[in-house]
Length: 236
Image 1 (cartoon, rainbow, N blue to C red):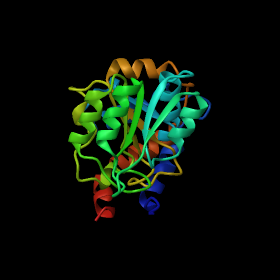
Image 2: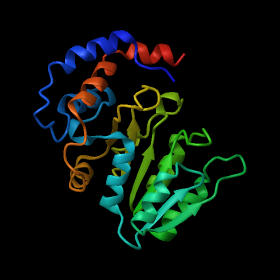
Image 3: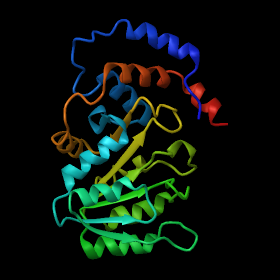
Image 4: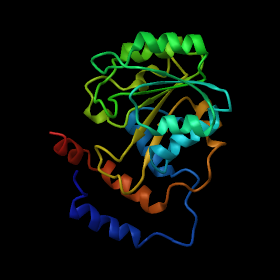
C-alpha cells in the first residue's frame, strides 16, 4: 500500500531529465533484465521483462494456445487466465479446490495427464485465497504435464516456500511469472517479468509487440532494486 519514498522520486526526476525521449527504448530493457537475472540467479537470456505480468500472460497465451488446445486451470484463480483461454478458444479444463480452498494437486495431476495439457497455470500464493503450494506439489504437476506449467509468483515475497525457479533445471517446462506491482509497490509503473529456459524465452519473444517497457519504467524498477532494505523494512 506504500508509495515510493520522496528521496527515490527525487532521484528519478534527475534520471528522467537525462532520458532521450525521441529515441525508442530497447526491445528488452537490458540493464533491468541483467539486474533481475542477478537477483534471481539465472542467465539474462532466461528473462523477459514486460509491461506488467498481465502483458506477459497474453504473450504466452499467443505463444502456446490455438483453438482446441488443451489447457488446465485450478479454481479459484486470478480471472485473467480464464479470459486468455477463452480469447484463444482453448479447450479449458478447470479443477475445483479442496474443502480448505487449497489446490487439488491430485486432481491437477490427473487433469494434465488425461487432457495432454499444453498449458497449465498455478499461482502460489494464490489470488484470491492466499493459499500457497509446496515445492513438491508444484513439481508433481510439472512432472506429470506434457506441456508448459506457468507458476504465477506475484506474491512470492510473502511466501515461506522456495520459488519454483529452483525447479527449472530439472523441469524445463516450468515458467515463473513475477510482478513488481505487489511487494515492490509499483502497480502504477507496470513492470513484470517471466523466467524460463532460454529456448522457451526465445519462442515467446516472437509473439510480442516491440518496445513494451519504457525508459522511465526501467529507471524506476532499477532504483527500487538498488534499495533491498526498503523492501525488507516494509515487509516486516
